[in-house]
Image (cartoon, rainbow, N blue to C red; front, side, top):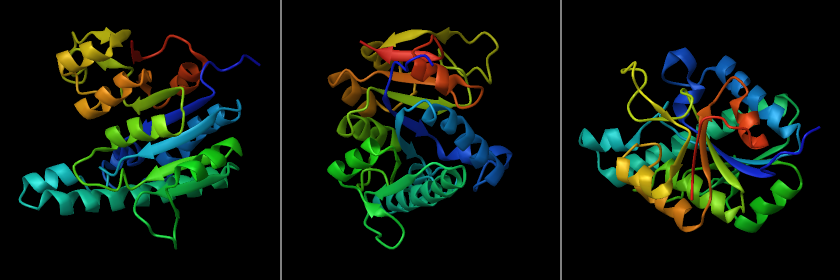
Length: 237
């Protein structure tokens, strides 16, 4: 079996990825399909951490724009990520993969608190570490959480699974002439305002030279990205 290029990765998923055609909520069939894609990578011996958004249940930033106080809205969004983390944990374990949910907001009855050394130990034992509740602080997105956890857990790459096959110069769903980038530098990503991750997250990975690969969630692209094949868009030095 070929050796993966990246032996420990952090996978960033949007909450909407778990909703399927419903657009909101959690669709069990979609969660099963997502976990099937992850299982292919786990079977290769790759150590994996996950950061999952909560936009399918509650989006703090949009709620604050409608009049809710931003910090309160962000805390609600963090709790939504815990619901998604538990759903993915349940499905992964049904498929035979050991997991641990580690939350930045303490709720011992349903998951462990995030402790870096404990998370690293789980990874070393072959468990999937699902990082929930963001950073535990308002005003930070799950993109920033992914960058932070990726560095804390000594991951060799961040993979962001999306509905499209990489980063485009404009929305490919609206523009037939949208052009996909194969490679981008961190500074170019920031300068172009491409929106693949927020500026704080890009600055964090840039300062620590952590590559970010943006590819499709389905179709085997995650496996190919882990193997180091040319897939999606890679943001690096």
